[in-house]
Length: 83
Image (cartoon, rainbow, N blue to C red; front, side, top):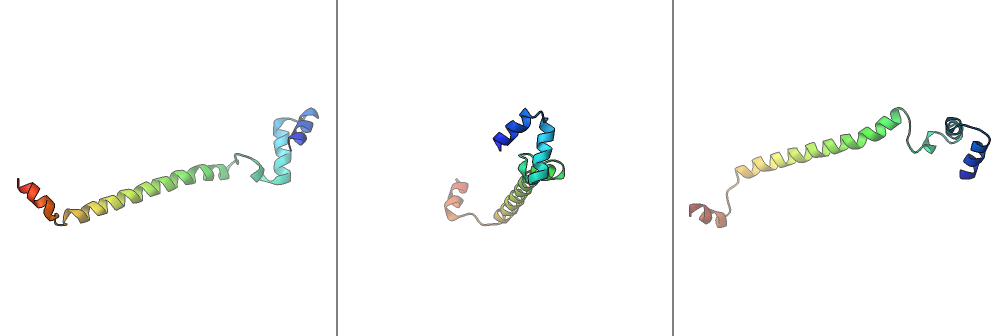
């Protein structure tokens, strides 16, 4: 592929022309950075998944805290509180 790109450059093709030729031949998967909607999708999905994970963790911790508030203290701690 490098040799082919080198030959195309020698023949006077521009970077955009070479890119268009490879995309036409192999499809958009040949690009390291997709263009348009796919690019937006690839950059937004990890951010959204991270935010959802953080939200889930926060909800879990909040629920766990409210459950623990009504729980009785272990006997080992009761003596410490009376001192």
